[in-house]
Image 1 (cartoon, rainbow, N blue to C red):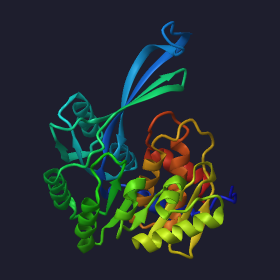
Image 2 (spheres, rainbow, N blue to C red; image 1 turned 90 degrees about the vertical axis):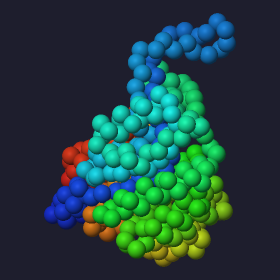
Image 3 (cartoon, rainbow, N blue to C red; image 1 turned 180 degrees about the horizontal axis):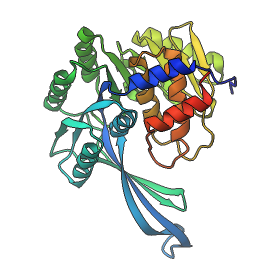
Image 4 (cartoon, rainbow, N blue to C red; image 1 turned 30 degrees about the horizontal axis):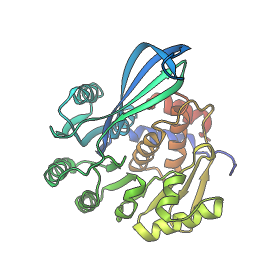
Length: 337
C-alpha cells in the first residue's frame, strides 16, 4: 500500500481556489436515484427463519447516483443543472422535492411513465447495514428520451463550466449519449468528467477526465491489478483507449492516484480519519475534483482538495455531501502550507 506525506498548497492559493469554486455552473447527467434508509434496532431472531427482526424507528431519504453528485456540487457552492429520467411514482416526487430544496435546477429531469424510479433501500440496525433492497431499471432509455435529455443539456451549456456524467449502469448513459455530450461540449471548451461503470468503459472516448476505482480501472484496462506497476500500466491503457486528458484512480484506504498523461503520476495518500461508510464517496470525489479544476486548480491541487472532501464524507453513514465551510476548514488544517 503506497504511503507518503500529504501534499500541501500555499494558504493564499488554496483560499483563491476554494473561493472560485463557489458560483460555478455544472451540469450533471446520468442515473438519478433515491436512497432510502430504514433505521431500527434488533433484539431478537425471527422464529420463521434465522434472520434478525428489525424494529423500525425511522425512515429517511437521500439523493443517490447523479443526485448525490449534484447535491455535493451544491453543498460546495456550485450552481447545478441535472438531466435524468425518472418514473411517474412516489419516489420521483420525493426526489423532485429534494432537488428543489437543494436549489438544483430540475428542468432536465424528464418523466417516463413506463420506467420505475430507481430506489435503493438500506435497512440499518444499530449502525450496521442488515440488507439492501434495489428497485431499478437497467434497460437503456429509448431514443426519444435520450434525444430529449440531450436537448435539455444543450440548452444549458452556454455558461456551464463542466459536464459530469454519473454512470451507474441503470440505462441513462450509453455510447450514443456520451458521443453526443462530447460533441456538444467541444465548441464551448467545456470539461466532460465521467464517473464510470465497467460495462460502458469503451464508450467514454473523448472525455476529459475519468475517475475509476481500482476495480473499474482493472476491468476497463483488461488487466489484473496487484501492485503499483499494474496501476500505471492500466492507466496507460485507458489513455490509449479513450484519449482522455486525465485519469484519477480512487483507491479506498490507499488514497488516490492521478495520471495527467501516460508518464505523469502523482499519488495522494488518504485523508480519512475514520471510515464508517464509503457509500457515495466516488460522487464526492468527481464533484469536488471537477469543481476545483474549473475554479483554476491544477490537476494535482484539485486531487488534493477532493481527497480532503472524500476524507470527510467517509466518516458519515450513507451517501453524504460536504459543506464548503467544512471542506475549507479541513483543507486549512491538513493541506495549507
